[in-house]
Image 1 (cartoon, one colour):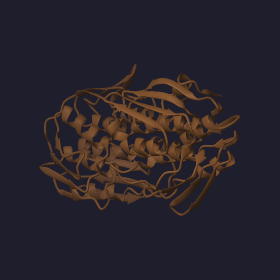
Image 2: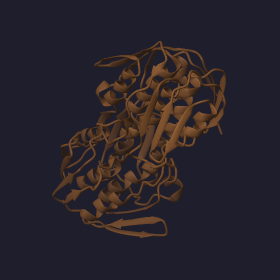
Image 3: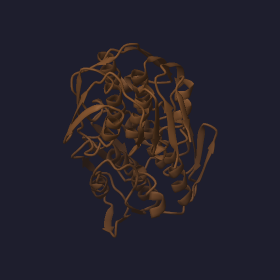
Image 4: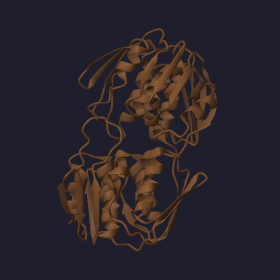
Length: 415
């Protein structure tokens, strides 16, 4: 098991390019299964979740390989329709393959997915969408068996679930007729999936709004796509600079995708400048408390950015209230931050952060992906040395986190 050793107290300075978005590339890789041809995905991050997706594609009979910063997938002749337990448990997002497998192969068999433990994340909305499209779903012994020829339908999601929206889109591409998805998630990653599907010849429109329309059974072919920068990685690096102090520039980032995060940091006292291709942040004074931060579906404040921002707000002055509206167990990093001297009180979905003048190094453990990133951010601004274990969680969503931070002047190494 790897550990990050971080020597805090060094302001961050310099520029770093943000790698491709994890939450965009995973459904895009699943979508490759739908196209009888070769797909080339540029700016594809080298993450453990991406490697797990490629393993699933290979299991299904596709050629899937990395070529530098790109991934090439050839789904000309898939033969498999089941994903074994060993692969499903590697990542929560593995359920995104359900709609694509069923649509391409006419049947699909999966078990319960794995990944971070952030509280209950049932896949009932995914299954409701499949059933609405005419798929037969059998649940038994912790697994799923789906079959049937899909037909267009009106799908109304009770919640704007990102994963359910993506699975519905992927399945609908192979369905007879027109599908309308109402109360669809509006996240930028949904737009990325639509853009990729249209590059393959699919007829999809409306992504970014609450209603998405898919005209199924359009002839598909291989294609090429470039994954945009990861907005959550960008938010993490901004929070790291806010905690450690200094001036950083993040390139390749669309500032519009994380404007709610930069707005909070600006209100906390950071100088933030956004251009079409970069975000610059300067922080030369302790952060001050801000009005309540409430996580919400896009375009609200992203739940994945909450832990790193909390780590930054823990060091400073004033009080900040966080209200977590997405996941029940999103505060697992709080006790670890307290080991570093943070003053945070949690009651249910509410966390009250009282800024302290300084944090100190400690031995802490990451329990999930973004919580681990929060501990690294806090360690950069703490006095002394911090050891952050559980690095495998961060490998799911950050491509060489230590390398990017070291490029900004951080004293961090992986052991």
